[in-house]
Image 1: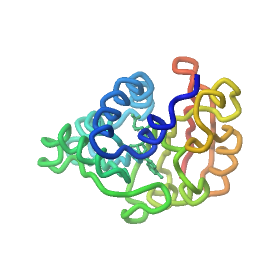
Image 2: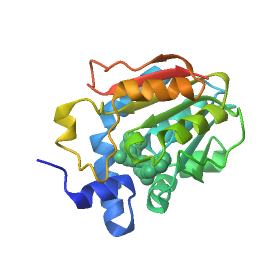
Image 3: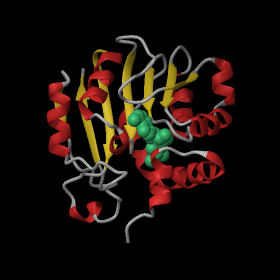
Length: 206
Ligand SMILES: C[S@@+](CC[C@H](N)C(=O)[O-])C[C@H]1O[C@@H](n2cnc3c(N)ncnc32)[C@H](O)[C@@H]1O
């Protein structure tokens, strides 16, 4: 059955009291995939890592703890509700300066050029209005040699297409995402379906 319009809309941009509930459900829903992403990301002390669409902030908090001392985990999310929820989870890390939250979306990040060793994004790609602009922006904020990881549903999978409302989710085939990554300047692009989570986990280097 297709996810309801209301839940889909809230997943794309959580707002109001329902947004807080959706944040909690989302954290549970995406826990396994975020665990897998965390293992691949393998954050190290001293690294600067961006999480785009950091949502409820659970993954960002783990990253912030792993990059200390000397590193920082920056979460960017356009949803005010999500940033508020994340702020609660991250109060210690924000106070210690090992985490930072900014208002930002894929196409426009209020962040300097070449400032990050790694960037990660889980289940956000569907909500970007412009794939190429988002990928160019991620390339801009990564240092040369920095790594991007993105986890998402493969838009070429018919089972996914029937589950998520097309007026809210822009589902992109993984090959199209790979082409976009190369066009944005990334190299050594791979877009495998992770056998553990059955989601695409794309890797690309700036
Ligand atoms: C389905 S939630 C995923 C949250 C979290 N990454 C996780 O794995 O649980 C999608 C998140 O993407 C954010 N988002 C929506 N549009 C975005 C955009 N254009 N760029 C970046 N993030 C966006 C939403 O606010 C929301 O926090």
